[in-house]
Image (tube, rainbow, N blue to C red; front, side):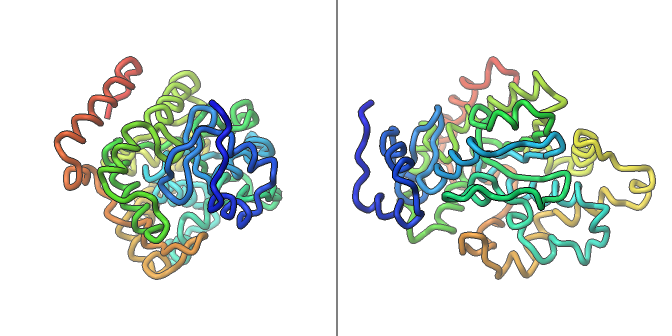
Length: 330
């Protein structure tokens, strides 16, 4: 496909983000479609990356050096990212922060405690100094497995993957885009957004390829990749907390079990508790968005209130086609 010349308004966006000329030239050569949030989505190594994210993706791929003790939390966007960040932060830091009433999650949104590598740390031209992060270093990312830096794949670092039923993922994504970015979103309607999602044009999508990559790795290397479903976490939070702790090499001790630490973490990180914290009701996020946009309903099956019969059948059909040979079901 021939290189595509970016229009003037996109060049202005690049200049505001201080993108290098080399990066602008490269991005302009990529196939593109209308974006969910501002400008465009660019087709890069088989996946769709937004204009505002792609330089961070490139910098993350090029410069990140994983430690064997690192923990990477990976999610498709709007598949339980906020909740799983809270859970992993509380789990790994339970000795540092034993008091739920004075816990960092009471005063901080989970996204400020667990930064997303390509969107926060490697945002723009910066190559961050990660030496000050305590061990184990905990980071978030939305990158598909195929796009992860080699060091993340080759090291002994742990990868926790959380995904969600595609119908709820889509509905949550659509609501988030229109709540957080209503003044700049290119998505005019649920129908338009659905057409893009169904065709695979979604942030860090196609969704099905994103999920399949980590599912395959979790089967082939279960000591490195733990594959979790949002629905299972909602149904059995304490069981899966114990499973997470075992996977990360920090199982709950008999003393912690006796003190009810598992239930304390589950309650601390629950939707009701986090959404009612003052910081999440009135605070602002890293991009100036209201923190409340990360807490809508947190329910399983909310898609029934938004998708038509035809939409439901389309998503069910493509999900069956994509996953039928993998053994993965939702």
